Image (cartoon, helix red, strand yellow):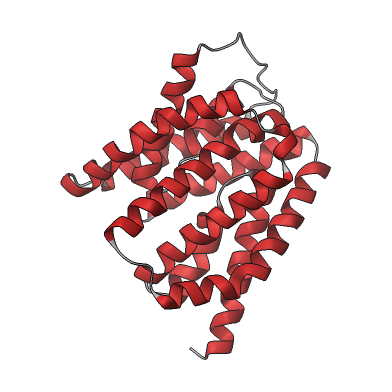
Length: 245
């Protein structure tokens, strides 16, 4: 494939993924990977998507910095940091295809049901710190197995009927921390090639433009549109786990 065409597809993929992530807070890899995994070899595409996703999350964190709920996020992160190494160990010693498909079915069914549900759930009583950390542990464990660290915390927030700003302020730092931890583990096992770094540099304009427009869209949509967007992305992400691997 000519380099110009490759660079164009790279920019389109990163822009689309960054826009969706800026709007919803997650799903960069699900969107960008639909193109990148067909243009690049997995050994190049995966670290590139991880690096781009961290850039997107950093941009989102800065744009939403006044909404960040650090206390709750830190509890999620502590739990997640415990869950990720366990997932890495399972990946090395167990056939996780069935686990991924099973989780994909659960996520897809939940999203489909909640999309059809006529009314929103209202927030319940405050949840204790151990439970928040447990949600983070589940997110880290599942994220290490499926590359979807935000799925469980996002579903938990949806079940509690959290407003969009509160949800993003809680989950966004968690996703960023899990992705940063994941790429540190990856670099510990393999070096990033110079081509990945070059492709990352090429994609930066599309990354920042997509993130900025996505955050603008996030501020403009109402609670109902945001919730339906998140549920559709969960449905698509769950379906991708069922149909792949």
